Length: 158
Image (cartoon, rainbow, N blue to C red; front, top):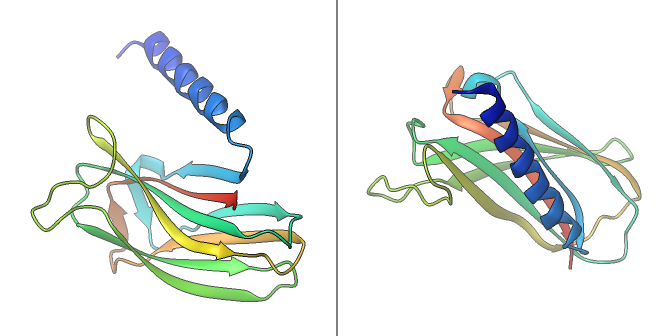
């Protein structure tokens, strides 16, 4: 594929994302990180550092997952370790359903990549101001999990 076409495609995609984010006044944080070569090793953690200043308003926390149609499972298990500003860590086990029982992908998107957004916490508040660290680990009992392209987090004020 032509390099200029790929660069233009990425630029248009980033411009669209920037436009959408600027139109969302309640968005506190959103970031997605790519999984290198669509191969998520069980030792590799995806980490997001989020500075929180609002300890009064309620928030919703969403988990973003993108997978290729080459992904071999209908779900994705992950561990999410949330580190609070005081150093305390809370560990959650998440199950994200990516396909129905017939094997049809539930996410959005055309082509080989499907995008999903899962509500992780609704109407929650952050008890401390400061930096929160969200660390994701794949928990699928595979040394190398193939077909997950991106993991992300979205935090929005209610």
